[in-house]
Amino acid sequence: MQYKSPSEEKFLNLLSKSTKTKEEIEEMQIAGEKFSKELQEEISCLIEEIKNNGLIINNIYDLVNTNQSYSEAIEPLRKHLSANYHIKNKEGIIRALGVKESGIEEIKALINEYDKFQTENYKFCIALSLHNILKYYKVSELRKMNNDNNLIVDEIITNKKLSITKFDKFLRNLLKG
Image (cartoon, rainbow, N blue to C red; front, top):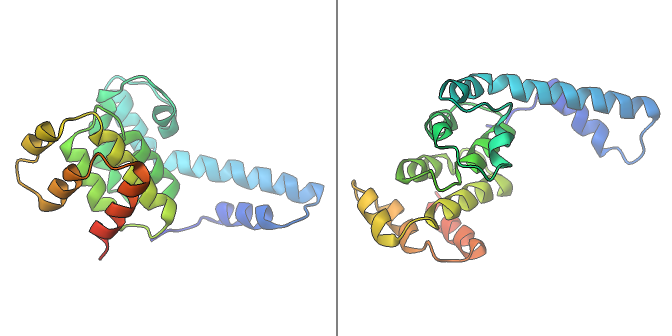
């Protein structure tokens, strides 16, 4: 269930107005900054766990926006993926997991998160991260990692070579309830 804080509501309401006064623009900036701080506070435990593993970051998007590897962040990211976070933080975690350091456990965790929010962007973030993880492995390697023979994971592995657009559509059909 997606929630909206008062500062997010205020920011979105002001943002949606076609014309804004100078005061409304200032209010919108203040509300946006407050909302950003709320998001940051919400995931402070995750950031701290990643720092305790030896990787210094300021926010989750530091991981999303880097091309450096960060294996020390994968376990905390996977652990926090199922936490009750705002959708913006969840999407950041999902995107941060879409790297070569992730493996079958992260694939399974992402699959479990698929229906938590019913937005197109959320579902596409998961499809993209799965697609990104899968591309680093051969099908035979992935099948060996899928030691519990999870049928959904096996089906995803089988279709790993689809383009992202086709993979997203395939995943939506596979995981629809």
